[in-house]
Length: 626
Image (cartoon, rainbow, N blue to C red; front, side, top):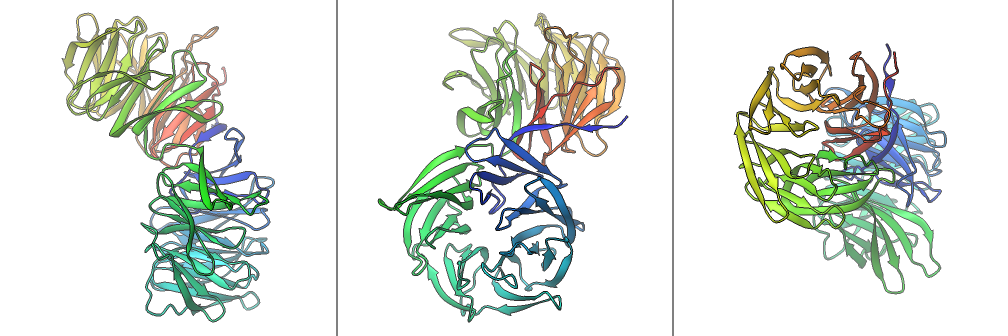
């Protein structure tokens, strides 16, 4: 039987590490940005209205939009020795127009000519060549090796399609493109004694000057006619380098800095006109089409911490005012949790914080931060009155779900960090697992919390704990190759399952007659919950370990358990029929290993999160009934 694609409903995330990856369509309200191997197109100010371009096999490394807004070009990274694809998309119909492969390993930078006729592409450090493509046919016109040193950026002139500039580590060339003889010829720019690594460039509207942002934190103004260095500024350099640039409506240059600062520099003297500081390195700035009568203008900035800001320059006060547009996780997400039988929101945890998201509007409702620590696991108590979480410092912390206020802390719950936890159905106990292999049961009182029992049989980290509906038993999965079923009245082992794998996830079938496990052996295994014998083994993946499992929950009119969802290092979300053991649907879009998957309690959608910090929300399709 064929495997169908799982429809992608929405994403929460933004590829903030891609320099100049945030684009704004000339229509003024369509934003385009990368997220892993997917390109997201959405309306400005509305995270809900999302569309996706999916065609890349690995992380998108650069984007370019044509002047008319008709075409979008995207380049990707691939493995050593392989060719990296460039895709030209026809934006109106959202379709793939051409797929072009010439560069090895990475596409570093892309630029359209002003009339949309040609596309210039630059390969990464393992390739170091520049190629000019015909946009209409998708054929390569001509190519040439670039300077001996690393070249990082390419940009076509603003008014002619036969000249473009490349720059990088201690090099800067203006290229003449001869389409009739299919040749490109470089001419070096004279920078005198100045040695700089250029990361970004912007060319003024008259093709008179190119402004180059450097890792040293200054902007070089180079005259394009005589190809001579003219000026450098500002006097107070931008810390950690200039990572992105854009031209404002009046010709001044907007610079995004590695220290999170945005600085507007005058085009003539390169003096600082205004500046503002954001949360982290500014990797993208793009001018908004909003027009203000007093000469003010607005622009959108993207940061390395995957936040987007709308920033307005107010001419009258000469100040920049920032407003947070969108927030996302910027590092690996470790866990997802839904409240009991409520599907409108879910919680995720990552480095330093827990965030609660609105499931259909894709926006952040609450953020709970604990600096310098990693949250490994998160869960809602059954009564919905608290969010419990396990942290890398070995503490269990509980927070109020609306206020985010800390309710209590269990100190030294586990020596090397809490790696798994679950709340009991009566909300009076928490069962936790630690990195050292212990499983502990805690009594949660209104005033105090105390340990009831500590069960030490695992010799490796406990990765997952699942509880039976009547609180009488729990099962723990560990990296030592064992899963243990514990009796929660006597606090002893009832049974154990063994396999030569690091168990990553375990769950009960809703009728609790069987257990399902997965791990580094790439297998999904069904076990008899009574005697611990393996009943069935499925090949969950051909290439990489599996990290996450979810099973369709029971609900009104359904017993549940008709499907399993798996995710892992192969970056695919797979929906399996429980009884047949056949993979019916595959969802592709992540660019990092999938850490967790969950099915919403109303069985409308699947939420998956990855090591790249992206949350993908897929439509839940149940397996076709036989």
